[in-house]
Amino acid sequence: MKHTTAFLLLLLTLTGCISTARLSDFSQTSSSVDFNGLSKEFKLTKTPIWTSKTSNEYYFEKETDIDEAKLVEAIEKSLKTYGYAISVFNIQDDCIIGQRGMVANEWSSITAVYYKIDSGKLQVYINTKITQDFTGGWRENRSMKVGQLIEQTINDLN
Image (cartoon, rainbow, N blue to C red; front, side, top):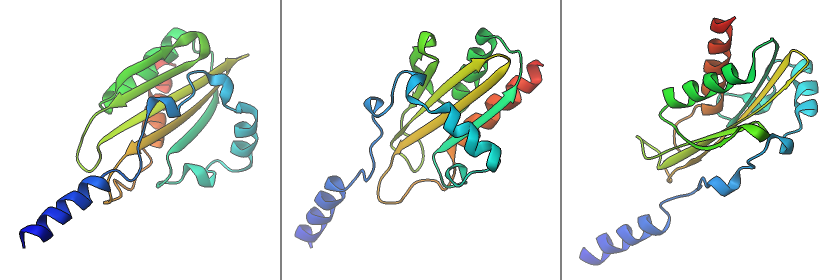
């Protein structure tokens, strides 16, 4: 019995994290994001398959004259609302990345927000990676939650 218990504990330790979120998985510049491609797909269908409830990506665009300082404030507020601490604050390259530690059913997660402001048009792409174990984690699109909060904050400012 002791050997079986020890073996199971060892097995759980070795297989503990099925997917691992690392800061190095994310680009720290928005130039890596194909905003034109995302915009074309977004115009074809407002809810592309990759923004489904079980996905980890989200994109939105809107006509607005928001200045960058207000946008950055909205992004920071949204990330902090969901428990993220800002790890990368690269305003020169239009990128903010938040990281949070262990919560129920996940070891950690990282959410990157990339944006582009051009001629009164705002484009925002959000990607999340979660370190989780064999339980599979929550069935939610964290990027969508953060993105919708960013959109709501921007709407409240206008």
